[in-house]
Amino acid sequence: MAAAATTFDPEAATQAYLATVKGAARVKSDGYFEGGYWLILWGAIVAILSDFIILQSRLSARFRDWATRVCKWRWLVPALYVIPYTIIGTLIMLPWTIYTCFIREKQYDLMNQSFADWALDQSKGLGVGIISAAVMFVIIFAVIRKSPKLWWLWGAVAMSAVLALTVMISPVYLAPLFNTYTEMKPGPVRDRIVAMATANHVPAEHIYVFDASKQTKRISANVSGLGPTVRISLNDNLLNRTTPAQTAAVMGHELGHYVLGHIPRMMAMFTVLFLLAFWLLSRIAPAIIARRGERWDVHGISDPAVIPLFGILATTFLFVLTPVTNTMVRINESEADAFGLEAAREPDGFAQTALAISEYRKLEPGPIEEALFFDHPSGATRIRMAMNWKAAHLAEVEAKAKAK
Image (cartoon, rainbow, N blue to C red; front, side, top):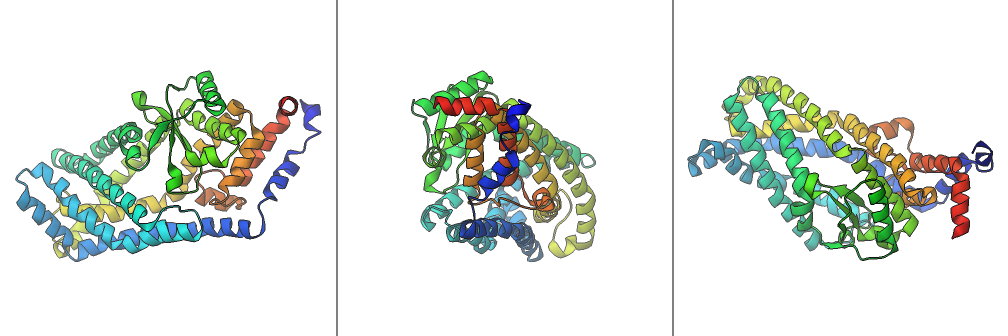
């Protein structure tokens, strides 16, 4: 193997791949992704301002009063509260959402939807968001009432359970609200996916294709769900815009997430974050209410009118922890990359896919930039990993190329 590797320079091969994206294409890719750095900051500021407006104007207290009048069951008041709260918050943030999620995507030629179709998807998302928030806050305030001192602990545990339930039902009940899922047609590409899945003990009775091309030009695939809802899905862009080798490389990566247990691992990691976030809420929110509660007409930590304050603190917490959460995800993605190279054994297909993703992800960031802002390995990192794998398996790769 060492002798074979000397005939192939993985770094030179990496640079050759990177050199294929240059000029206007590289400027466009870098501009899109680097602009996203600022969107993280401004998005947090806009969300905080939205919640502050709802608090400062006493809209939050009015929403609570309305929910209390309408509903005689105290436990259900938070569920009713979130209806006007979510709708008004969405309207306050609507100009920002339109710019970041529609106008900007159109400017960079990544969006395929008309504004009407985009707005319809946003409306569906709003409906899902209201129902999700209703369930979440009913649970949180029930826990606060039952355990005023340890609500942060039980609240975090409850949110972890809700997260697990959401992961389980999403592929069956939520994802189909936005896209049509159909069984992948028989053929060589499907056969190869099934072979990789079977070899790695991934359930492959059903492989779905969803019509993401009606919304975006991005390529994507996933192994989603938990337990009985686990399913393999890939979008039509992946099939239509990549070669069979690239598709196999992507699916090998996605199978890696399942085999390596990344979904339960991420849920465990987020449980730790929930614990920290809820503990901080239990310490900071009462102190703020003691100073500002009368001005906002918020009566205490068990008052649903405190929800915007929870939102402000949660947004701040998530913003500060962005590098941490990015790193958590990026480590899993890197592990799945390594698994995918072994499963698919398509290093050039993997490298070519990294180039395709460069339409919306910067290819060559600096190390600090990648650590702070990337929730996936950069294109350069991925191509270098693929070329190093190719160097270590050169005889196999060359024999396979000759067989074709």
